[in-house]
Length: 404
Image (cartoon, rainbow, N blue to C red; front, side, top):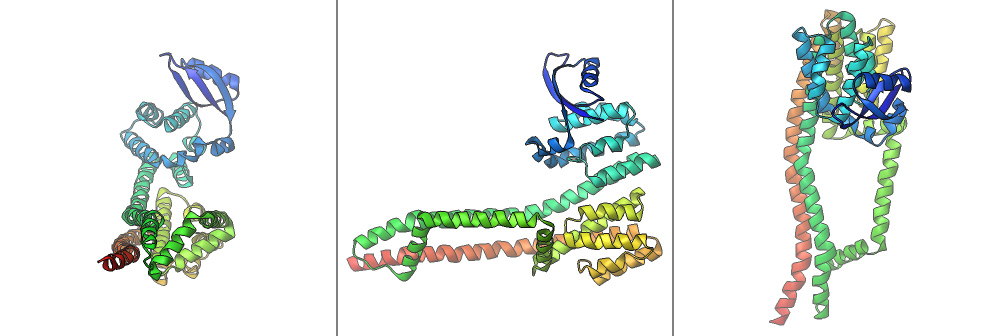
C-alpha cells in the first residue's frame, strides 16, 4: 500500500507533518480529515526516495529511541495491554519527531488490521532485519512480548559493546589531534619567525632547524596543497574500493590479520555472531532462517561467507561447525563448543556462553589496548615536540652565547 508525506493543520491550529498509508491521495486526505487534521499538501513517497533524502541519512542514528520504545512496549504487553492500545499510549511520549511519525503510521496501520512486522519492515531505517524477524515470530507464536524483551536486551548488549570501543578511543584520539595541531602550529608559524631573526643576525642554523624549515616551507607552499589533495584522493579512492565486494573482503582480511587489533576484531565478530544466532534461535526461528539473517549482520565479509556455507551445510543435513572453523575467524576451541552444542541440543545456551565469554575477554583486551596506546602516543608526540623544541632552542642558545 502506498505511503504519503503530508503537511497539515491540526485541531489546535498548529502545523504538523508526517506520513500516512492509504490506497490513494484522496483516501489519505479522507483519513487525515477523519482524525481532525486538515492537510495542506500531500505527496506519495517511496522507500527508495526516502532512503536517498537528506533526512534519511541521519535516521539510523536514532537507535536509542528504538531501544527505549521496545522496552516500554514489551512492558505494556507483559502487563496484558493490547498492542494497539499500547501504541496509542506510547506515541504521545515519543520525543523524536521523525520516529514519532513512523510509530504513528505503524499504529494506524496495525489498527486497520495489518501485521505489526509488515508495518515495521516499511521503516528499515529504524528496525533492522533481526528486529522484524523476531517480531514476526512473536506474532505467529503469540509471544510478542517475549520477543520484544529479547530484542531490547539484545540491542542493549550490542550498544554497550560498541560504546566501550568508542569510549576507549576517545582520549587517545583527542590527545593525538591536540598534539598534531600543536606540532603543525609550531612548525608553520613559530619556527620560521625565530629562524628568520637568527639568520638576520648572521647565525648559522643547525641541520635539524633547516630540516623543519624545509617542512614548514613545503606545508605553506603549493606543494602543501598537492599533499593535501593527494591524501584526500587516496582516502576517497580507498573508501570507494572498500565499498565494493572485493574491497570489503580485502579490508576485512586485513583487519583480522592486524597484530593486536586483529584479535579484538575477531572476538567482536564472533561475539556478535554467537549473540545474534542465540537470540534468533531462542525466539523460535529455524536454524536456516537464523543463519540467513546472521549472515547479513556479521559486519565482516569473511564471516559472512562462512555463515552462508554453514547454512548450505545445514540445508544439506550436515553440521555448521566445519565451515566456521575453516573460515579462520572462529578458532578450533569455539568451533568444538558449537559442535558439542549441536549434538547435545543446547546450541542456544552454548552460543550465549561463547558470546558472554568473548565479550568479557574483549573488555579486557580493550582496557589493555587503551592503557598501551595512551603512553605510546604521549611518548611519540613528546619526541616530536622535543625535536621541534631542540630546533628552536639550539640556534637561540648559540646566538645568545655569541652575543655575550
